[in-house]
Length: 194
Image 1: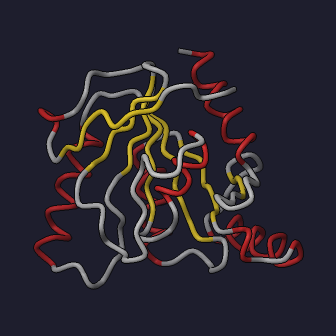
Image 2 (image 1 turned 180 degrees about the vertical axis):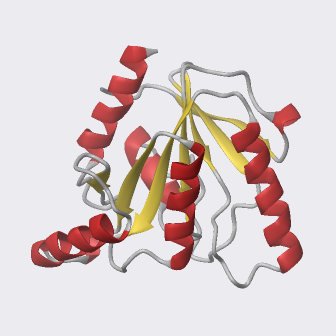
């Protein structure tokens, strides 16, 4: 699968600001600074469509990227960032809850950092996805920072701690492109069913 067109469709806080429903929303949920924007940019072969930042907590809205005029990447604000005020955390929670209450067809890609075991926030998000019965895939990013032995070891830790079945975890690197083809195959399978 090759992505030919990608554009920012909406920067939204509430359902009234969402773009029209497409074939599917692939929702990126993860901690701040885990590499969601870098993942989008690598998969669409663009450097800066999704803005990246070295400062965590920069995504303050739900960003919709329309892909090939058919479907969306949906980037949610990062969770678990302590330096964001309680009021902002509550605002993010309401925004995200509102998105999950919408009727959009979606699959969640929970993004975790392969370099570290899943955090309490990661486990909480995964439990939330399971409790809602939402289809999900865990994508473990930043694999380029690890040796092959460390990748295998850390992959096993993520799989065990989030109680993942075979096929529920993809290891990814925005730098090297590791996992890119696998993720694009997953998108193709979703679109094939739509």
